[in-house]
Amino acid sequence: MKTIFSTLTLFGIIVLFFTGCYVKKTTPSTSESAPPGEPPEHPAIYRKSESSYYYFTEAQVQKNRGDLEKAAHFLEKAIETDPGSSFLKRELALIYLRQKKNAKALKTVKRIIDGDPNNVEALIMYGKIKQELKEIADAKKAYEQVIFLDPKQKDIYLILGDLYMDEDNFDKASGVYDQLIQQFPEYYVGYFFMGKIHAKRGKNTEAEKEFEKAIELEPRLDEARFELIELYKSTGREERVIQTYKKILKGSPHDIRAAMTLGHLYHKKGMRGASEKLFTDLGRRSVSDSEIIRKLAQLYLDQKKYDAAIIILNGMLKGAGDSSDIHYLQGVAFDRKGDKETALIHLKKVRSTSKFYQNAAVRMAFIYDDQRKISEAIRLLEDVNRRVTPEPELLFYLGTFYEEAEKLQKAVDVLEQGLVKDPDSVRILFRLGVVYDKLKRKEDSMEAMRKVIRVDPKNANALNYLGYSYADLGENLDEAEKLIKEALKYKPDDGYITDSLGWVYFKKGLFQKALKFLEKAIHLVPDDPIILEHLGDAYLKTGSKLKALEYYQQSLKMKKKDKKDIERKIQDLKNFGI
Image (cartoon, rainbow, N blue to C red):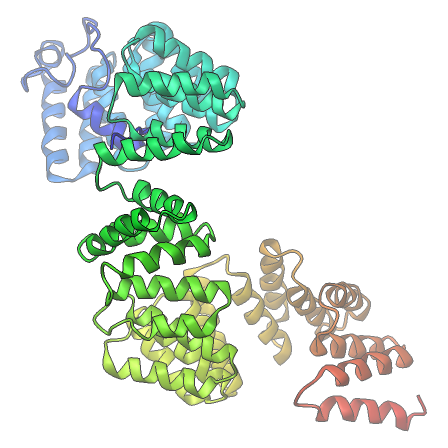
């Protein structure tokens, strides 16, 4: 299948520049060397300055060694001795780009353009750097200037058109692709994208013509055929849909998407023999072609088309009845549909040698947990942990199930085992911190949260947890306030984090300020017993004993355990006649 890529990566453009094949060469000025394709002597540099040539040669040596810092240094020295050389500046800009120093690259390219406003290569580099910096308006201006100066820059039409398409500016995009067609009337890509624009505008007849023209010029262009299929579907031309799929499969017999979709269409029409043939073939091929499984997950499971996925997978099982991959996807599809028992049947058929074995075990464990069979979930994951070398993800989930079952030391053991395998795993570190806290290992808990923050400075949950821990201990209150405010930057409407800030102010003795945030927190999370208790504490400190009693009583209703403190607070108020 012929595929169209409408954009080129910055790396791709860099490579094309290095090979000297991206743009049409222009005649260098007297102070400038020839383009990269010139023989290695670079006589233009040598004629200008022997020292410039020496520095350039040293830069090439260092670049070939992979030492880009030294390469940049020598190129900078070369430019000092030959400041008018656009070639040297371009070479330096390319080094900066490889170092991801976009700002320096941009400055260097601008120096080329300032000296030679019509330098096409420099304008292309300038546009691409501006794209990387998300300064799209400047990028578009540069590309428009390139096309004006050199209308044969085929790839620039695609980049510029894509930028306009991203903005849904179809008028500008169609103008660009129309220019592309005028300059390259035998180039199929312009017609393809004009078809895309017409389709987005609902002009189906015009879109069909453009896609058909693209296919006429490039018969292998199945991408255009898939676009035509969508147009036929939207106008109810089912027979045209089937015929187009057949054409795709005739030219590309192993096209996965076409086989799956046509097979499903046959199934819906009651043409079971035709659908079974396609699905059985897919099943057989999936044993050696993992792309079939990936494509099915992408096209059907990711799109929540579970019924269609199940039909296709059932058919594929006739070609590969013991395929762990197919059984795993079938289990996922039934699980997401809510048919847990059928999901378990398929997931249990995933063998321990399959790449999906541990994923299947985790999914089964969650099904057991949903069925309130936590012990069965734990036994399953323990068994997998013994059978194979466990992935960090499996250890994480086993740890969370141990925590849920209040087997806290076992949770610590497997989470620490997971951390050995993946020391920077944010979720393992965070979960471990929570379990340490439950074991009254407060300092270990806070250290785990500090590690989370070092790995992921924007982790609102860890920022909040550490800040709240300080507040609860009544220490480092300024640091606690800072941490929790930082957490709120990332989750401004989180009731639990808002409660933490209120609790810091409570601990600081700023009771009115505490009330403001605690009231907001309870509005966001109305039934949380801890927030209700905090509100009661704050009202008590401000002298509103009746309000305090009201919130304490609400908190007690919501609490499932650890009720002694709140019961004591209620009793104390009642003893005072409240």
